Image 1 (cartoon, rainbow, N blue to C red):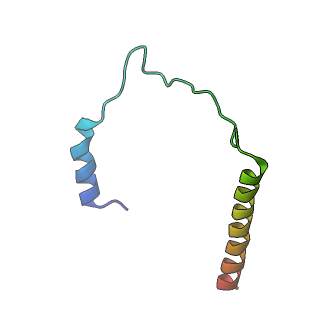
Image 2 (cartoon, rainbow, N blue to C red):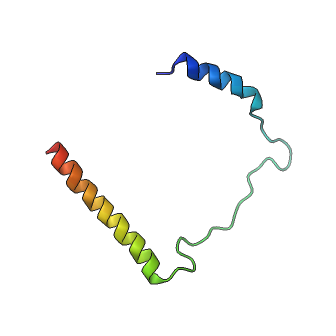
Length: 67
């Protein structure tokens, strides 16, 4: 469901959008960095612990909310 205000705003901004053309138009690939490059084991373990705690907390929260 799109309202008229959003359509008018996009139509007004459309002349500002330009596309690159020519030989430099293609996206240039970047070297892929390792996710935890240069970090010690404790840093990625803290990230994993934070993710797991949030995920389990979400299961408990939504489990009690739905159940």
